[in-house]
Image (cartoon, rainbow, N blue to C red; front, side, top):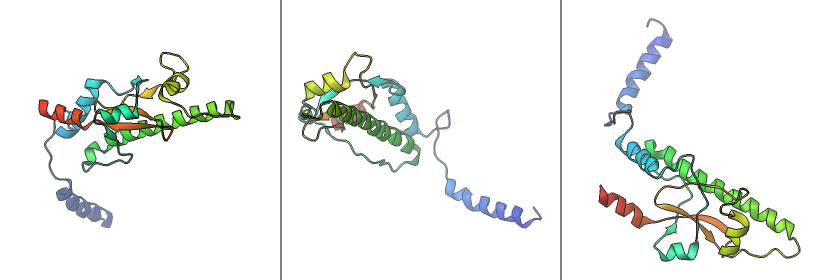
Length: 169
């Protein structure tokens, strides 16, 4: 520790110790909040899972859904990765749907028609067909929905599902 570099390293290390802080951890070293999020994802089995379930937006809104935030909003840095994953997969799914709609409209360039829900499901998502769009599975409180007015795929949150899950605990 006689070198200037060694002293600087020691000073920086001593300054960082109070900033790190102590948090309760689970057996695997994760915070309780991060462990709960991971457990919820495991329960629904969303990691590397696909779905072709898309609700009509009007129906979802009538059932109490609200449009999901498109940003990564979390105050807990340990949950930031989970929030980024949810947001990213939703945006990637919407981009895949947009591209499929562009291809469909390019094939009927004379008269591209807006897609109703049934037509959207049959021509773009194509449930059960090998060339259908496979969307990433979302957490238990979110679903994909087709917005007929704006002709885009959106993600909706169901706050009642979150409240019911918290009441169980």
